[in-house]
Length: 309
Ligand code: ARG
Ligand code: MN
Ligand code: MN
Ligand code: MN
Image (tube, rainbow, N blue to C red; front, top):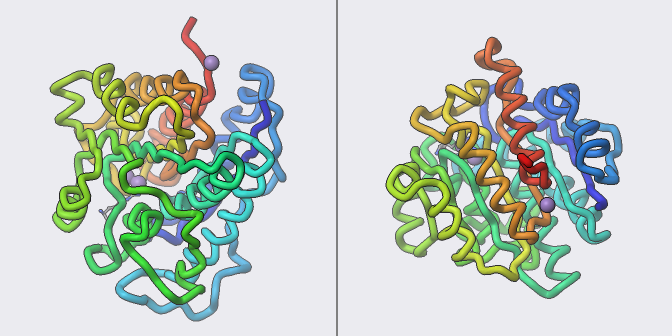
């Protein structure tokens, strides 16, 4: 199978340095070898980690409370075009972050290509401790990595092309086609948004109650068996015990096996067309950095069809 790999060393969606080093850490831990020799992918990779520093404006003051709005907008717009180019060729697209704001680019690029190729909308499986659906107004932090789902669905809008106004309808995602898994730190305003729009979400409580097997049946049942899937996996969905090196860790998360199991189940649908792995920050909790990188690579392998037996 053909696979497009985009390495995104971008950290402007939040305030901690280091998340930009994740793609190199994942690659140095053997990711590309795994994809080519073990999983038989033909990898299309430009050999670069994109930071989009050249697109960053000198003057980027907050707008509607958003931090670095023009830098994040420009980076995600460029990423969207790169991802679209891979997806349009029918390649599976693997995007390595970077912070979760980059999903504005990866998901919109995949969605646009899927619509053109088969006239369908993608389903978005968002595995995360957080819902990342704040609007600029509901956000307490102003960090755009807490807002990508709001922009991708059109819940948050901007006219200005230099601040996400470039997002076209063809790149946006249907609210009924989003499923969250692993939530445990959702802001007040986000809860209101999830409730008002009837967005399908499985929290850690649901996983405790039903077990991950049943939750995956329900999550994938909601999507249906004939819909292309984009899996956006924030490593902070895992418990900090397994993935300590991340910018916004929240205790009480998924085990390593639950994380891998989610990825395996999505793979088994046969409908996965794209994967993001984001928020690995090797410079935080450095004694656990290699563990976190290994956990990230494991999730990628599972999503791409590495089986236990
Ligand atoms: N809800 C918080 C915020 O909006 C945290 C978001 C964390 N997002 C993430 N991608 N790690 O700032
Ligand atoms: Mn998160
Ligand atoms: Mn996230
Ligand atoms: Mn398989």
